[in-house]
Image 1 (tube, rainbow, N blue to C red):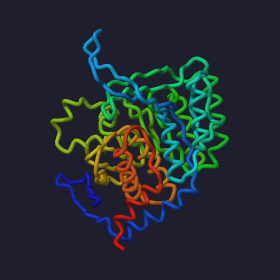
Image 2 (image 1 turned 90 degrees about the vertical axis):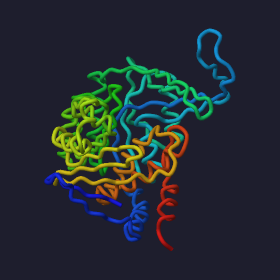
Image 3 (image 1 turned 45 degrees about the horizontal axis):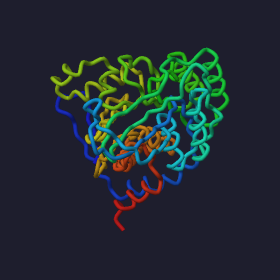
Length: 355
């Protein structure tokens, strides 16, 4: 069910649209169209490392658990996981990002090649580390995360190389994603360049933002997709103050729409689903489809990947968001940062369509 609201009245006008068989069939059919579309992805790249073991005792050196490591798993993280989601959903992706001149950078490129993700747009910055997030797990329990990274904006030479690569590929793609994790790839100069060149080339620019109090940082994008906490920070609202405001999601979304000068705002809210806002002053709520939440890591990556492909396939924002929420529901039921496979999404839709 989708619920539409108008900002023009205090009592929100509600329209219910059922997830009827024709809509579900349309979403099912459009999955095969994803292979015809190509996304240009620019963002922070990294690796996710999982050290998984058993806790049998407390350390004698400090009151902390001792994890006896039994297995190690390395997966694509940050924007590399978005690229992987686009691929596993059947789409095509050109990825641009920074890595360090180090072993983690080499491993990141190697895994991407194994997943058939082109690494030609990976820019090496000799002054930074390739981001590595190490999660230490006692089986399914997260004990601690250790981050190895450099947080600094890209150098003038790296910026120039990135801009040239964008110009080389911008006319080949259907849409552009800015995937900002605050590691430094997405600088103010690069954001302005991407949005300006996107408008010249008539390519939509979709932003998955970093938590900052400057929504204007992404001004002029087509769509911005924060989670609730990010949206709250982007508009500079104090968490304690916002709790006292009725209809706070509506206020945050409308404010963000204005400050980011975006066509659309999509606020993801975990178990509450998503709330969509557009320039016509409509607000749309899309319910969650997650039956079991096991691990939310990477769910936002799945959402932006599915949204971009859905919109490229000429679904409406509401239709693409339903598909994205279904895809997110699949990945949160799994452990760690994993992509959504097109076949899994196909099975979910097929189970909902009356036969």
